[in-house]
Image (cartoon, rainbow, N blue to C red; front, side, top):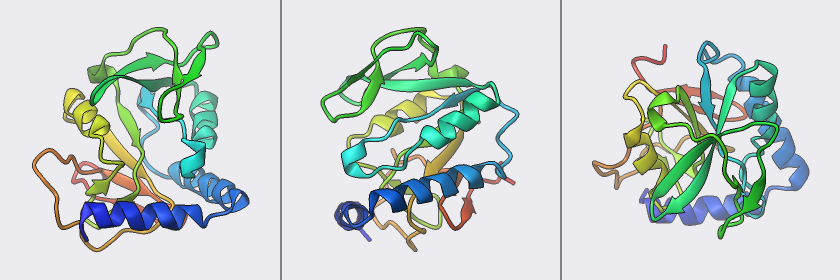
Length: 191
């Protein structure tokens, strides 16, 4: 399917999910993550959910990261297709941006090449690890700034599509995608 069609379909599918189901599915994703071999790293980049878009509630994952005493890094939109990344501390203050995404106001900036694992928001993905986001290009730009060996982990409420047909050279595939029912592994590195 084409990205545009997948965006429309998966936005509609999300709308039909109840809040209690979203919470249960988000918890199942967080629990599944515990079995993925990613816990020996130091810096984990995670997005905070856009509630009205019924994104995965990443607070369960955040709790795991903090319980494992990991360095948690959060994104902040700073321009067109541009993000800065801040270490989460007890002093971090948040503000909602123009898309209603909670972001750190400021703090200790972490360069992209320091980040080991990135949890990536998406609407849909396919069996080859290609993903469809909201189409703004923030994460593709950010991932090109990271080390080549950064672990790219998609989080999805739904299973994989067979194929996204309009992939381009700027699209960066995932290493894993975690769903409530299945863990998908795409990378040779991700064994």
